[in-house]
Image 1: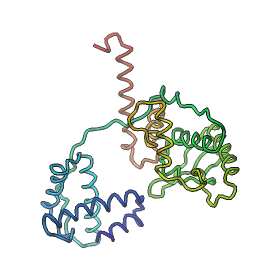
Image 2: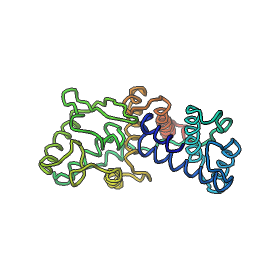
Image 3: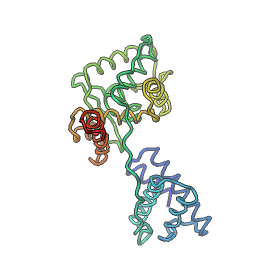
Image 4: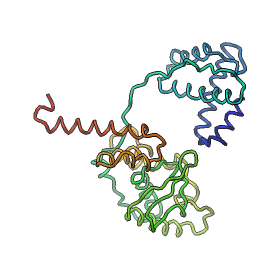
Length: 294
């Protein structure tokens, strides 16, 4: 049943490979628990008490945070929902099991003054030109690193000055770009094609050998650049996505416009950035008002 479920979320729900792998890992861990504790090989035979004891065990024995436990519970809900649909079970053992409360975390972002420190003063060789464009594409468009890695030359529309991005679950969206970023893209393509005249792919962004970039490859470039300008602990491509959205919101951009650019299906996903704006307002008040720091 597990293999049928994984095939379903990959082919019909179009979940990413990373998400499918995470679901597989979580469900196999749950299955192992049922075998070890209840000598139960079939997950479809589990009851609510077994599920509840598993989640308690994650907290007490494994010491997992509520966020991680909720993620595993989400995998179980999806699995048993699928089992209901396939009429393998009559009721879900997840009934009555609620998500654990978890503290709201502000989306980590790089302050404007730190982003202003970013500079690319190296020679105009392929690697320098590519790294600068990679960084600016993530910061100026807010796209995910996987979306950047999948961009093709044909996804760039120089006339309309926009990009066509293939997001989660193969949903397409359009992101506007500035004339300066478009010039950077066109300049990079010239250098790239000189460096790799015989490359065998249509990807816009390529690695040092002219092939597809890995997630770690993108992470390493972004981390190295941010390492020199900010003390923020997290220095990942996703931080640039948070930074893009936060800076837009702080400058007065409409939150629904940001939602469309980011490709969020729900406005609630975009609203996490409003907390950063509120925190900024608090800082301004405390520093500017005569009684703000009292």
